[in-house]
Image 1 (cartoon, protein in one colour):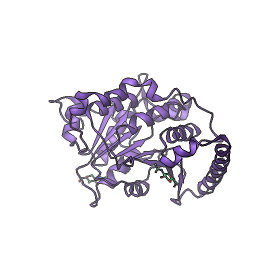
Image 2: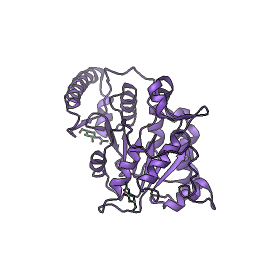
Image 3: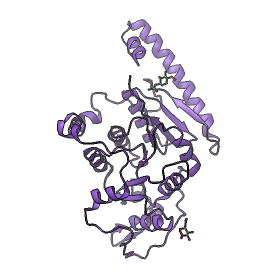
Image 4: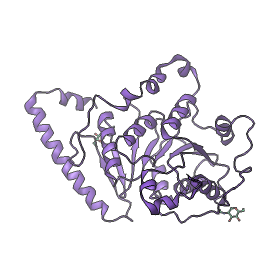
Length: 318
Ligand SMILES: *[C@@H]1O[C@H](CO)[C@@H](O)[C@H](O)[C@H]1NC(C)=O
Ligand SMILES: *[C@@H]1O[C@H](CO)[C@@H](O)[C@H](O)[C@H]1NC(C)=O
């Protein structure tokens, strides 16, 4: 990191030469990425380092970042009251249940009325986070995995894959997976008729939350997985406020340019050091460009697994 900043401060001629080299590296990285993209079953990895040129993405204004727009979110981290609170890296299922739903709330699964008579349905096709990919990702985490947050759960397909992997004997089986979603769909579900159908509209409102609950019950994960029905921004704020810091965050929420960038900044700040921020849909331009902006402005590297899944590791800063 220091070397990088020294280079930046050298004279114009050297800077131009460096920019030229960096562009060349970028082009090579992008073309190697294309090669990987042709074999989706092969879990190949390509590491993309932070650099200044992304030929595919629109330029962005470095003066307006989520850190400027969400000042109070980031400034809480300097607040002495907040600093004095203990950080929770391994909350129990009961603790999260109480924090979210109240001290005396009955178990949400045990008391689920199933008004819409939803049956479990595991046919949802749009998840790239398979059990084998998630297993591979856990190898990147240096610290015990106790608390995982998924942002964007929809019917729970990837949540179930995460949940099942973490039940294996090499992990601490007392983990909690918190799923943050509005369960109201994304833009694509409202503009495309076939996708709208997936949300199971009833009386003018999606009931995909009910489907999620049915699926978690059918997968026997009701002691581990908890839903938090809220927006990704509010969810991040809640976790920050309570100092609930997960070891893995799986981001599969916003797919609109700028929105993903905000989520990246907010969720990165609550990830435990040694953990990983994972995301879906690297092949969506909006997602990819926002991840690239994020790694540039924070001088991080992103690793792309297969064609869709990417992750960024939170290393200790020197
Ligand atoms: C869930 O548990 C029940 C009862 O132990 C069992 O019959 C069923 O096969 C399990 N389902 C899954 C998906 O593991
Ligand atoms: C990113 O990758 C480069 C090249 O491999 C390496 O020198 C650098 O330390 C990495 N940075 C981080 C933050 O991991």
